[in-house]
Length: 129
View (cartoon, rainbow, N blue to C red):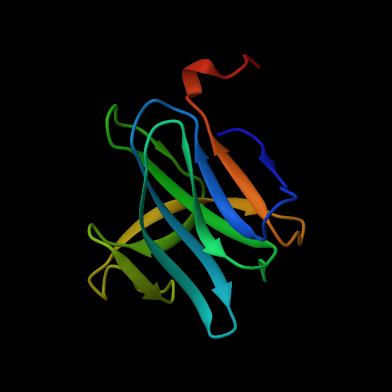
């Protein structure tokens, strides 16, 4: 995972896959009715996709991504509900009891910007710490 940068042109949340692999993305956020998680968005290698259109309304968004070709994931510590096929799930409680899976999403702090881009990079190409 690399830096998330604000963008000037459009108001939306974009994810750029800067690897050669196909990546599946799930996103979580809080809307006026409560928590929502949705997925799967497929992003081909070296491509970007808009996940949420229009001005962003929350400061924090949550993303979980899987590398479909080489395995591996981009994850964090925030647990949200998912499932294997396309989904939109309301709420974050009792995922397993409701028949869903639980995944650990990483937090994206947009700083209350109206648009944001998250870059997914190949961990093997990251600068050493």
